[in-house]
Image 1 (cartoon, rainbow, N blue to C red):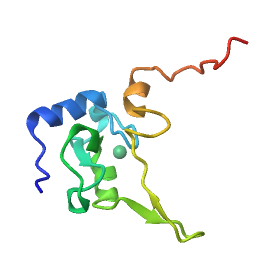
Image 2 (image 1 turned 180 degrees about the vertical axis):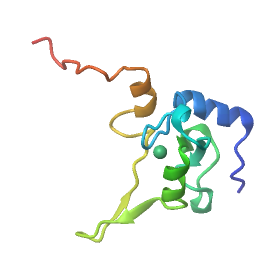
Image 3 (image 1 turned 120 degrees about the vertical axis):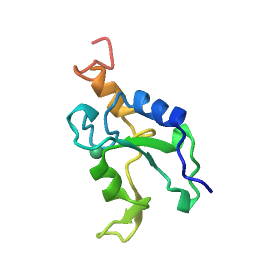
Image 4 (image 1 turned 180 degrees about the horizontal axis):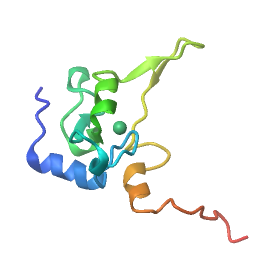
Amino acid sequence: MSSYVSTHLRQFAVERANYCCEYCLLPQSVSLHKHEPDHIVPSQHGGITKADNLALACMRCNRYKGPNVGSFDPLTGKLVPFFNPLISCFGNFAARISRNEDRYAKPLTSL
Ligand SMILES: [Zn+2]
């Protein structure tokens, strides 16, 4: 299975993330290295090269995560999946933060 990311798909991931690393939120504009699309589930684990399996990552996050999908909790010994920025409870967090959608707390009720 190929992990090649086409120019079109790469640009889609960059724009969806609003040019920020989707793991640590580092803007591309302040990074020495170009952010790159990361396979959330790496191809060697069956991950497919498609938009919903790609997250824009800074070099540090991408190298740190590597081809892993999770880690073992030292207390329970259970395999815990890594943070997935596209399905986290924050939604597409990087894009929302960079657009200031989460700048202010929003009430959940009318009170
Ligand atoms: Zn990062």
